[in-house]
Length: 211
Image (cartoon, rainbow, N blue to C red; front, side, top):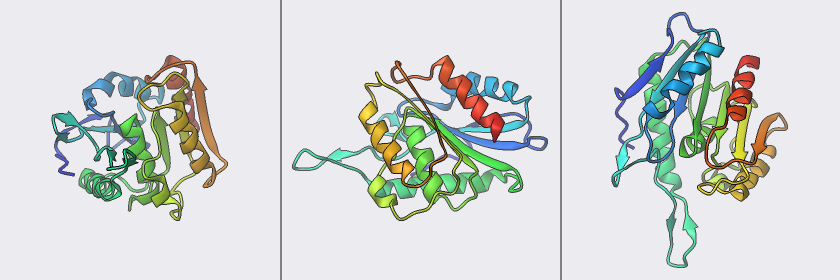
């Protein structure tokens, strides 16, 4: 993945922060779509967070963190694990370029494809990660991650029953997979679609406050 490390938004004071948060937008979107939400998160955290919102590169006219699954000759979806690994390495390079204080906690999170990327980082990033928030996402290439341990048990995961972009069945599969790794998941589900409701935002912030 060719990630432009200069194309990101920052919120908060890097030097005086108590926690660093790396937040990834969804497929086809951009970091500006979450700027106001993350500003609110920082206010609720008494402006103690330093939040970085990168932009995904453009692939075939759409912003995408990693290659989407493709159909094989039998019509089955095949995930691109190698492509995902390249994306993880690109994010690791981004984290290095940010020169974050390693004594502070690092939280990764995102929405939709950004949530999926965050979950993969929780297994394969070379950096210390202290928590992961996955909103309306899924675990990509789950079979390839079976033998990898979690970098942190602090996981907040939320999904709507009415999600049409990433089905609730995909969420249940992700949940089953993660529960083989930890029994300390914080979960939120409800009657909503592919979006972040006020209730999800509130529980996400409460989860961050506990960390």
